[in-house]
Length: 235
Image (cartoon, rainbow, N blue to C red; front, side):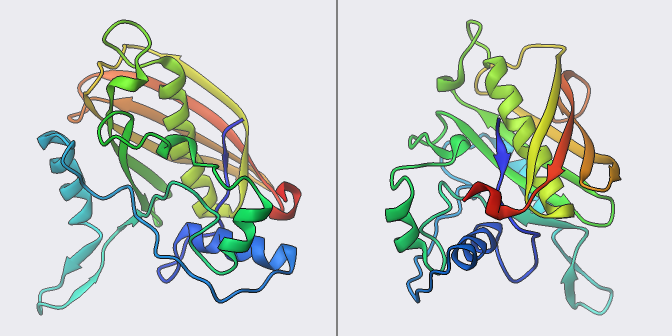
Protein backbone atom coordinates (compact mmCIF):
# COMPACT_ATOMS: atom_id res chain seq x y z
CA UNK A 1 0.00 0.00 0.00
CA UNK A 2 1.31 3.42 -0.93
CA UNK A 3 1.04 5.80 1.99
CA UNK A 4 1.31 9.46 2.87
CA UNK A 5 3.42 10.39 5.89
CA UNK A 6 3.13 14.16 6.27
CA UNK A 7 1.50 16.27 8.95
CA UNK A 8 -0.91 19.07 7.97
CA UNK A 9 0.83 21.54 5.64
CA UNK A 10 1.37 25.11 6.74
CA UNK A 11 2.93 28.12 5.10
CA UNK A 12 5.96 28.00 7.40
CA UNK A 13 6.89 24.31 7.36
CA UNK A 14 7.26 21.77 4.60
CA UNK A 15 5.48 18.38 4.84
CA UNK A 16 8.86 16.68 5.18
CA UNK A 17 9.88 18.85 8.11
CA UNK A 18 6.57 18.29 9.86
CA UNK A 19 6.83 14.55 9.38
CA UNK A 20 10.38 14.55 10.66
CA UNK A 21 9.54 16.54 13.78
CA UNK A 22 6.65 14.18 14.46
CA UNK A 23 9.03 11.20 14.27
CA UNK A 24 11.49 12.93 16.58
CA UNK A 25 8.81 13.68 19.19
CA UNK A 26 7.44 10.14 19.01
CA UNK A 27 10.86 8.54 19.54
CA UNK A 28 11.97 11.10 22.10
CA UNK A 29 15.04 12.06 20.07
CA UNK A 30 16.44 15.58 20.04
CA UNK A 31 19.09 16.99 17.78
CA UNK A 32 20.07 20.34 16.31
CA UNK A 33 21.33 18.81 13.07
CA UNK A 34 19.57 20.10 9.96
CA UNK A 35 20.31 19.41 6.32
CA UNK A 36 19.05 21.52 3.46
CA UNK A 37 16.83 19.30 1.29
CA UNK A 38 16.55 19.41 -2.47
CA UNK A 39 13.09 20.12 -3.79
CA UNK A 40 12.63 17.64 -6.66
CA UNK A 41 9.48 19.39 -7.90
CA UNK A 42 11.45 22.33 -9.28
CA UNK A 43 11.99 22.53 -13.07
CA UNK A 44 15.02 20.80 -14.60
CA UNK A 45 16.47 20.39 -18.10
CA UNK A 46 14.30 17.34 -18.87
CA UNK A 47 11.02 19.23 -18.56
CA UNK A 48 9.10 19.69 -21.78
CA UNK A 49 7.78 23.13 -22.82
CA UNK A 50 4.26 21.92 -22.05
CA UNK A 51 5.21 20.85 -18.52
CA UNK A 52 6.91 24.20 -17.95
CA UNK A 53 3.82 26.01 -19.21
CA UNK A 54 1.55 24.17 -16.77
CA UNK A 55 4.02 24.67 -13.92
CA UNK A 56 4.21 28.41 -14.55
CA UNK A 57 0.42 28.61 -14.82
CA UNK A 58 -0.11 27.16 -11.35
CA UNK A 59 2.91 28.94 -9.85
CA UNK A 60 1.47 32.28 -10.97
CA UNK A 61 -1.60 31.54 -8.84
CA UNK A 62 0.41 30.87 -5.69
CA UNK A 63 1.09 34.58 -5.30
CA UNK A 64 -1.08 37.31 -6.79
CA UNK A 65 -0.75 41.08 -7.05
CA UNK A 66 -3.45 43.37 -5.70
CA UNK A 67 -4.69 46.58 -7.35
CA UNK A 68 -2.30 48.55 -5.15
CA UNK A 69 0.67 46.53 -6.36
CA UNK A 70 1.06 44.49 -3.18
CA UNK A 71 1.60 40.76 -3.34
CA UNK A 72 -0.47 38.28 -1.36
CA UNK A 73 -1.03 34.55 -1.22
CA UNK A 74 -3.06 33.18 -4.09
CA UNK A 75 -5.57 30.31 -4.10
CA UNK A 76 -2.94 27.66 -4.83
CA UNK A 77 0.12 26.51 -2.86
CA UNK A 78 3.00 24.48 -4.27
CA UNK A 79 3.92 21.40 -2.21
CA UNK A 80 7.69 20.70 -1.96
CA UNK A 81 8.79 17.17 -2.94
CA UNK A 82 11.82 15.36 -1.49
CA UNK A 83 13.41 11.99 -2.16
CA UNK A 84 13.41 10.90 1.47
CA UNK A 85 11.99 11.89 4.85
CA UNK A 86 14.68 11.07 7.36
CA UNK A 87 17.55 13.50 6.81
CA UNK A 88 15.99 16.90 6.23
CA UNK A 89 14.92 18.12 9.66
CA UNK A 90 15.70 17.98 13.37
CA UNK A 91 16.89 14.53 14.42
CA UNK A 92 17.17 13.31 10.84
CA UNK A 93 20.73 12.00 10.98
CA UNK A 94 19.95 9.94 14.07
CA UNK A 95 16.75 8.58 12.59
CA UNK A 96 18.56 7.61 9.39
CA UNK A 97 20.74 5.25 11.42
CA UNK A 98 17.75 3.74 13.19
CA UNK A 99 15.72 3.20 10.02
CA UNK A 100 16.71 2.28 6.45
CA UNK A 101 19.50 4.70 5.62
CA UNK A 102 19.18 3.98 1.89
CA UNK A 103 15.40 4.33 1.77
CA UNK A 104 14.00 6.64 -0.90
CA UNK A 105 10.48 7.82 -1.61
CA UNK A 106 9.12 5.63 -4.42
CA UNK A 107 8.20 8.43 -6.81
CA UNK A 108 11.63 10.09 -6.37
CA UNK A 109 14.01 7.12 -6.49
CA UNK A 110 15.21 7.52 -10.11
CA UNK A 111 18.21 9.83 -10.25
CA UNK A 112 18.31 10.54 -13.99
CA UNK A 113 16.20 13.65 -14.76
CA UNK A 114 13.28 12.83 -17.02
CA UNK A 115 13.61 9.05 -16.71
CA UNK A 116 10.84 8.59 -14.13
CA UNK A 117 8.25 10.79 -12.48
CA UNK A 118 8.71 14.50 -13.13
CA UNK A 119 5.95 16.34 -11.34
CA UNK A 120 4.87 19.25 -9.17
CA UNK A 121 1.84 19.24 -6.87
CA UNK A 122 -0.33 22.26 -6.08
CA UNK A 123 -3.03 22.41 -3.38
CA UNK A 124 -6.08 24.68 -3.26
CA UNK A 125 -7.20 24.92 0.38
CA UNK A 126 -10.52 26.70 -0.15
CA UNK A 127 -11.74 24.36 -2.88
CA UNK A 128 -10.16 21.26 -1.28
CA UNK A 129 -8.50 20.34 -4.55
CA UNK A 130 -5.06 19.11 -5.53
CA UNK A 131 -3.65 19.35 -9.06
CA UNK A 132 -0.43 17.86 -10.37
CA UNK A 133 1.51 18.66 -13.54
CA UNK A 134 3.29 15.52 -14.68
CA UNK A 135 5.73 14.13 -17.23
CA UNK A 136 6.33 10.36 -17.32
CA UNK A 137 9.74 9.03 -18.39
CA UNK A 138 11.00 6.00 -20.30
CA UNK A 139 11.79 3.90 -17.20
CA UNK A 140 8.06 3.71 -16.44
CA UNK A 141 7.20 1.70 -19.55
CA UNK A 142 4.52 -0.98 -19.51
CA UNK A 143 2.87 -1.58 -22.89
CA UNK A 144 5.33 -0.70 -25.70
CA UNK A 145 5.74 3.07 -25.81
CA UNK A 146 3.29 3.68 -22.99
CA UNK A 147 3.32 4.09 -19.21
CA UNK A 148 2.84 1.06 -16.94
CA UNK A 149 -0.55 0.96 -15.24
CA UNK A 150 1.13 0.55 -11.87
CA UNK A 151 3.03 3.81 -12.36
CA UNK A 152 -0.22 5.54 -13.26
CA UNK A 153 -1.91 4.20 -10.11
CA UNK A 154 1.11 5.23 -8.03
CA UNK A 155 1.05 8.87 -9.03
CA UNK A 156 -2.73 9.08 -8.62
CA UNK A 157 -2.39 7.67 -5.11
CA UNK A 158 0.41 10.16 -4.45
CA UNK A 159 -1.71 13.14 -5.48
CA UNK A 160 -4.85 12.02 -3.62
CA UNK A 161 -2.71 11.22 -0.59
CA UNK A 162 -1.24 14.72 -0.68
CA UNK A 163 -4.72 16.21 -0.62
CA UNK A 164 -5.96 13.90 2.14
CA UNK A 165 -2.90 14.68 4.23
CA UNK A 166 -3.31 18.41 3.69
CA UNK A 167 -6.92 18.26 4.84
CA UNK A 168 -6.72 15.80 7.74
CA UNK A 169 -3.11 15.03 8.69
CA UNK A 170 -1.30 11.66 8.46
CA UNK A 171 -3.27 9.20 6.30
CA UNK A 172 -3.00 5.74 4.79
CA UNK A 173 -4.65 4.49 1.63
CA UNK A 174 -7.40 2.01 2.53
CA UNK A 175 -8.82 1.48 -0.94
CA UNK A 176 -7.88 2.56 -4.47
CA UNK A 177 -9.99 1.92 -7.57
CA UNK A 178 -8.55 2.80 -10.98
CA UNK A 179 -10.27 2.83 -14.36
CA UNK A 180 -7.90 3.01 -17.33
CA UNK A 181 -9.53 4.79 -20.27
CA UNK A 182 -6.63 5.51 -22.63
CA UNK A 183 -2.89 4.59 -22.38
CA UNK A 184 -0.50 7.40 -21.49
CA UNK A 185 2.39 7.71 -23.99
CA UNK A 186 5.89 7.71 -22.53
CA UNK A 187 7.37 11.19 -22.26
CA UNK A 188 4.01 12.90 -22.50
CA UNK A 189 2.81 15.71 -20.25
CA UNK A 190 -0.50 15.21 -18.46
CA UNK A 191 -2.60 16.91 -15.81
CA UNK A 192 -3.89 15.23 -12.64
CA UNK A 193 -6.82 16.76 -10.81
CA UNK A 194 -7.99 15.45 -7.44
CA UNK A 195 -10.77 16.62 -5.15
CA UNK A 196 -12.39 15.69 -1.85
CA UNK A 197 -15.82 14.06 -2.18
CA UNK A 198 -16.71 13.69 1.49
CA UNK A 199 -15.27 13.24 4.96
CA UNK A 200 -16.80 11.08 7.66
CA UNK A 201 -14.78 10.91 10.85
CA UNK A 202 -11.44 9.29 10.00
CA UNK A 203 -12.56 8.45 6.46
CA UNK A 204 -11.87 10.67 3.45
CA UNK A 205 -13.25 9.83 0.00
CA UNK A 206 -11.48 11.38 -2.98
CA UNK A 207 -11.52 11.30 -6.76
CA UNK A 208 -8.76 11.87 -9.30
CA UNK A 209 -8.41 11.93 -13.06
CA UNK A 210 -5.56 12.14 -15.54
CA UNK A 211 -6.19 14.10 -18.72
CA UNK A 212 -4.30 15.75 -21.52
CA UNK A 213 -3.17 19.28 -20.55
CA UNK A 214 -6.19 20.87 -22.22
CA UNK A 215 -8.58 18.34 -20.69
CA UNK A 216 -9.81 17.06 -24.05
CA UNK A 217 -8.62 13.46 -23.52
CA UNK A 218 -9.29 11.35 -20.43
CA UNK A 219 -6.54 8.83 -19.70
CA UNK A 220 -7.42 7.50 -16.26
CA UNK A 221 -9.86 8.10 -13.44
CA UNK A 222 -9.81 6.82 -9.87
CA UNK A 223 -11.52 6.90 -6.51
CA UNK A 224 -9.89 6.29 -3.17
CA UNK A 225 -10.59 5.97 0.53
CA UNK A 226 -8.01 7.28 3.00
CA UNK A 227 -7.96 6.75 6.76
CA UNK A 228 -6.52 9.24 9.23
CA UNK A 229 -4.00 7.53 11.51
CA UNK A 230 -1.78 8.25 14.48
CA UNK A 231 1.77 8.61 13.18
CA UNK A 232 3.08 6.49 16.06
CA UNK A 233 1.51 3.41 14.46
CA UNK A 234 4.15 3.54 11.72
CA UNK A 235 7.17 3.84 14.00
